[in-house]
Length: 349
Image: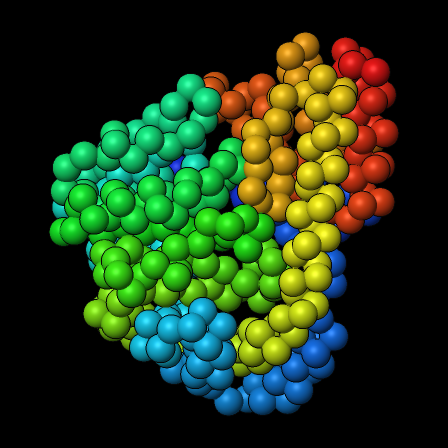
């Protein structure tokens, strides 16, 4: 017998990438392959001694340096328990006129729109998997991941700004989970475009996927409204250890940049090596590669790599069922991956 409210009986929850304690090469959830900065680890140890007290609901110890990092005012920054919580509040409270997003993108958009019974319009990507903003007509809130996932493709900031200018009364949410691996951030343009809100995360370039820390950057009015929802739900959603780690991460920018540059270099090398093996790859601007082989099915590649203890991500969506998404690991991990792919029957040698 189910006691769940009937309006939620139909929900199809988000399916995360497989997590395992088995010794594998884990290239399926777009995590950072490098350890967090040492000062982050030390900060977590110190913060652990304060866990008998509530965390600071203002999150000022991260908001202030993050605002400085982005060269905005603190009142332009919101902090949440991962970018997923930030997105939750946005879908909950900012989409009265409906929402539009691509058919192939981050899976939580569809989950949240279903959860809140939103008037939703899913707009197919173009044949080349790109987003055409000209197709996003009407009054609904628009949310796009830029760069998009799992395709890895990005829209130039100037294009998004032009779209925002054409639709000044519509909210444009740009999910920048992967922007540190590209040149596509909208943050520098926000002062001239108050209807654009940028969402980001500490999970990718900042090594803190397990800490759960996300943010939004936008106009003072948008941030005030987000805080209204947060403080009506759970003011303490960002715990003390995560706050300490986030602050320490911002103090270790040189290390973050060093690791980000290594990931970008390894991404470019991996794409070139895959192309030598007959793969077609998108022009990824993220910390993963999205690729397909003309003669070997994506599911086959996924399963054969898993049999060799290498995890990548495969999606059953018919439009991209021939693709696999491969997170960028260390150079050594990617070399092992390439050797394993060479052993798959049908791959060009």
